[in-house]
Amino acid sequence: MEESKSPSRVKPYHLAGERSKRNLRADLCTAIENLVRDMTPEGTDLEILFADLTECRKWKALCGKEPFTPVNAQEDSFLIKLASEYQHCKDKEQTKQAQAQAKKLTKKIKIGGTMKDSRISLDGSKSLGSTRVEAAKSVGRVRAYGDEKRRLLSIVANDYPYRVLKQYFKCSDKTIVAAKIHFILFGRGGVPSENFKFTRQVISQEVLDDLFEFLHRDDISRPSSCRSVMVDGEETAVRYWQDSVKNVVEQYLLEFPNVVKRSYIYIAIFQGTSE
Image (cartoon, rainbow, N blue to C red; front, side):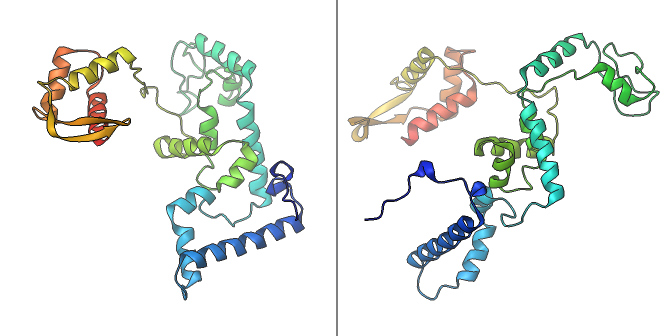
């Protein structure tokens, strides 16, 4: 009986030889065709099916907009340079220098407009040097964005399939998804505004216990005498609200102010009622 190859010995597709790539593509086409014929009635027009498949959202998320378009020499050079900058963002020493420069910055740097109107300096005075490029070099990098890698990747995230991006940038699918979201929110290579602040509320177990104890009070919800459901292997009575959900939330906020946000209470309520 022939032994199957160990997964650890199989080379990545982009490192395989041309003959191995050709054989893999042929085997993959045969496997897909057999799978489709098993899942669809006889006489199905496979050309129409595959055309629709390449247009569906899940296929585009897996393979990109144009999965079979090869990268030409000019694009390859651009992607290599961008990927190099992407990897360079991991340089901790450069990040420390940028943060040190940012601490010296006292006023907003104005880049646009004319040379006369620009204020490219750490203290907000007129530009240093004879050109704005020289002024920028004299100031140096003044900020290291925490999401700089994501910003760089957003420049090409929507233009290439996942396999190409992972090959050049050595990143995960989740990083590519984050870059796509960055592109939608801030544009191609855009920088988030200073006014945007994203926070998360950490809920302690004690607060959760108090919330669910409140929701199970008889004046808030009443247990049914005839209906029950299984929860974690135990038979539990179905409870009915004594008032509207809106009034229940208002009552909780009155009794427990400044503990959790209103949206979190709604999430806890509806998750509990859906289980």
